[in-house]
Length: 330
Ligand code: AVJ
Image (cartoon, rainbow, N blue to C red):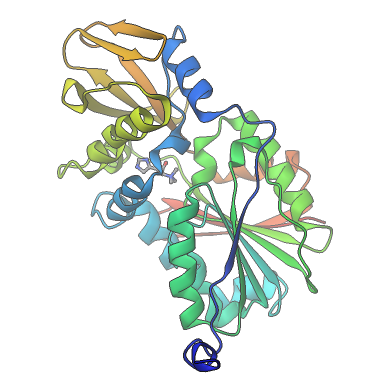
């Protein structure tokens, strides 16, 4: 019956989700196979996030040892009015980079009251489902999903918007990039924010090694499952024949490079094949899957300045484990 659908679908329509094809990024299959064949074999951390990987990461954020997500949430909720004031108040376009389940941004909504919410993530199916739920709770905020591979740059589709832009990059996701690449990404954020805009970013700080090791190698083995799951994703993307049982999770903080490294280590000699090739791994050989850089507040402030941000303010938890910074483009 005409009209019925309208009636039941009253206001909250499904948010539009667009995929921005990355012309610069190599195709996943080529990138993955090149990484596996390299002298130091590696898989880029963006490949963690298939549907199961996105869910395993959500589970990580609930672990007692993984202090990052809850520490950041407590900093944000403890200083929300001040952060919103510094960020220019209500009515902005909130651009959430690496939005995942969108829960971090959703907790800002009541105080920030953005006119528009643009959620950007590489895991576009997971993002679309998250956005659809969120739109029902916040029918007055215009929402857009953007599927994009950040390692090829932050390219946003043209948007009809008034007001300022606030870029949101929480969770210390910036830690996945080596310092020089991180500065280049921050510079792109500054450009995307525009002259009136700002960046709200979460950064994990250097702390005792035992705390960092535990956060990335938890006793329940959730992080191990998250790390090993990349092999299943890679099997689908690149046609490899990884047997998860032949590999083990390894994670540790390296104070010299100031980063937590994650690897997958061969439990015994193993051969991995793929269409047109393959590689033998000896017991103990590793595939590097992630770096998670840790900073001092001073060090990260300097990177923001290098990226061209005019000034920044920082908030920390009482233990000094995590920082939230608000950086003004000018
Ligand atoms: C989503 C990149 C911030 O580095 O802490 C969690 C990913 N890896 N446990 C991080 C991750 C292992 C996470 N980031």
